[in-house]
Image (cartoon, rainbow, N blue to C red; front, side):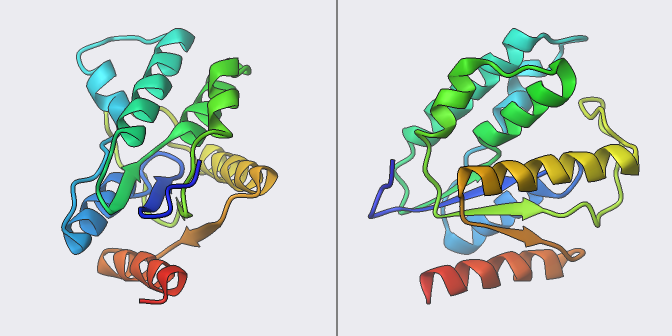
Length: 174
């Protein structure tokens, strides 16, 4: 559902594409807090996780996004991320996620490109370039299927942030 008085920005994409960094930098630029990726908090200290854990993560991420009242909302991941995660890992998606993707609203989805080198993190699972390309295609297909406004964001270091800000500037004409 659209929130007319709030600019809503979703940061999505495969692992190790700079989502959290872009979210931090955009939040700093706009002087707002950002909605952190809840998966890190939920899975911290766990050796394994389940299909149901991913649904729980989706539900909490959705709840945190919906209660945000900042004039500019920057979300480090959202329900498309959890949908693709479940689809890729378990070959099925919880109906709650499918239903709520239609209930979430963002003015723009910034889809992070796979042009950054994959870096190790104990929570990451898909280091191969083949998997990263496949995941990126899943994101693009889902965004197009849903009819969501999105832009692929490429570039290294500060250029990536500048590219994201340029997309937002064009969207808001500010």
